Length: 208
Length: 199
Image 1 (cartoon, rainbow over the protein chains, first blue to last red):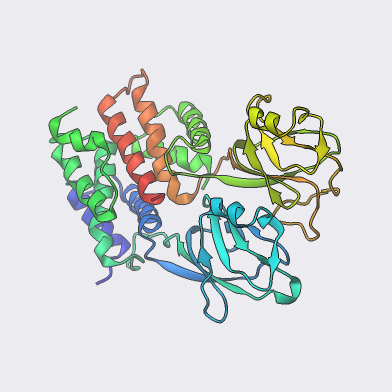
Image 2 (cartoon, chains in turn red, brown; image 1 turned 45 degrees about the horizontal axis):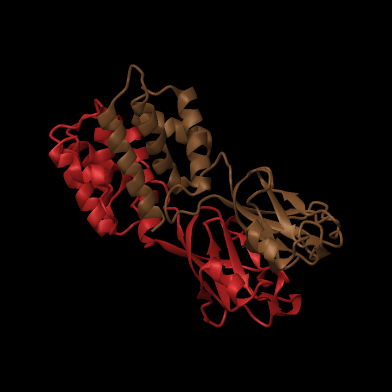
């Protein structure tokens, strides 16, 4: 089953015991659900898309925005023939070739991410060798609306979406008692995402 | 994806209790701290820019928006970062010796300035409006800086984490909505979201 925007708002309202949307109106719940969705796909990179990208002659350094807007993370760069470029840490470029900024070769061999905003295609190719590449990237999920359009992320992430959204709504209302109301969904969400629960939240059950 | 939307998000999550001017000030602080690399493993808000290479000029000021320099290149070559003492071992006259730069020194220089070692012997090709992302003919013998930069638009998926961080600061300060428990939870949620995005 696919979750829709309206159904997710209803579920979140039920979780925070506000089914009439008295304390938290539906647009606010929707905004929180969308914000958490963006983080979820940045973290899990499950919703991918491909964009064709034609590099410039002799150039190695590019802005991620030049490929497409709303890229959360580039996960691969592929040649037309299906060959994947090897991803390397950008700090390794100088060890391999100090002149990486302007080295040219017959074809791209590697790509490297610098932060999230820049990436390197190494080596650059001359104009005669330019061919379109396919950039595979995690995309910003399409914003949900309060309607029957399905959520883009997989169903198994719905509990994590609701857990994190629930905590944010409790924070908005500054409802912290009993403390397990916050600690339990956060622990579930952090476990699902494979990140460490921050120390103070671990201590929530023990009181501040 | 703007400063204003992030501040509005923070205020929404504070149920409109926040002082929006103060939230804006905290937003600017958080962006500067992200650029300075206060979060382990997070290299956020990266940019690059050319600075014109000038013959017999050793010092180069960083681009105006730069917060922390990640790499410096002269012409096509990425330079090694060196301490003044290392440059001294290379050449006691390193501040005036002319040649093709192989390293840069930032320590012991004025703020936001790096000194190339040795000093460039020639001036670079005129840059015009070229940037590291737009040039068509390589503008040789110039300096390229890659750096974290100050911005007013963090990425869309980072807005929630930034909003929570500025909420934590707003709830922490002395005010009629001072709330240390909400501040602690907002801070930890911000950390959780940043860790999720940048793992």
